[in-house]
Image (cartoon, rainbow over all chains, first blue to last red; front, side, top):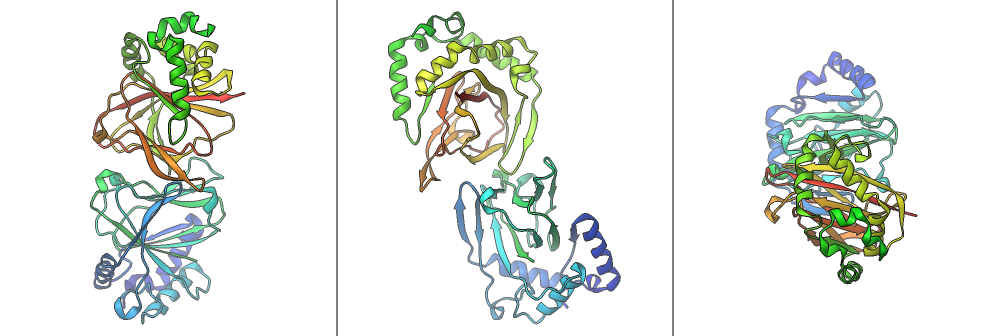
Length: 197
Length: 213
């Protein structure tokens, strides 16, 4: 069972639902079983990422998840445990999730993703799986949520290995950015999977 | 160029910048500079003023500014500073003689009674990512540098060339040098950034905008 059994318990899912209702953000630590997590990290670190840069909006690398025969990730629709993941998300979000596509992102020194009027995202739910084994917040790169209706308020997701973050963006004023990665991140990679509902 | 006889300009500025022939040369240089009109004026003030400004700056309160686009420390607008020398510097920059000088050098029509001026401090890993500075009224962005940086320190002001109205590549780097005044004309293609500071040097500058009529 790739998902940590603790998160499959009904009581736990009820707790997560309550946290999401109240806080709009839930962080699930040790989300996958250790072996599954390590397999995903290994697979992500061998993916051919392509670097993209548009100075006004972003600088990062993206990849496409390979077919399931070449990877063992639960985040791929052909994986035997895909339905388990969808059932889990449907349970904690209290709505039927039929499908979701995850995109792997890799950030290193000088990378960032800015807020920009031309690329505003519609309200929705972000599902972010952090596959970075070790990260120091002083290196930058925090996935951060801001609310244009409440200037000055930001919510930074902590970076943590094997962590699933569920973030509800209730209005189009709530947007996501990735803080600039400074020179202390040289030679290091922050890798995560982002899916949107 | 009657404005050059202004007592404040005479008192503060290096004599080179009171010479009409040299100023005409600079004005034409500004227009020719790529990727968009800008100018770098070294040894701008009489040295004793530059030294004293650097000594005065740390007395001002700097606050950390952090958003998706930037991370650095900045003071409030110095229009309300209590520090006498910074107050005098604000008075100089907001004087009609000084604004007329910048207006001449930048070939821009500027409002004679409005400037924004604050001090900034960039330290290790501080940065300001690519943007164009366009905001209602802003016409000329200026920087008066009070630090000496080398390329390996980071902190350069990088100007971007444009392709299809978007920033393309860094075309020109202005390295902060003590007592240097630099400015560029703000437009839809004045894309620029402050490179990340890579060492523990301090990058002090007084900067702001002159406005259009």
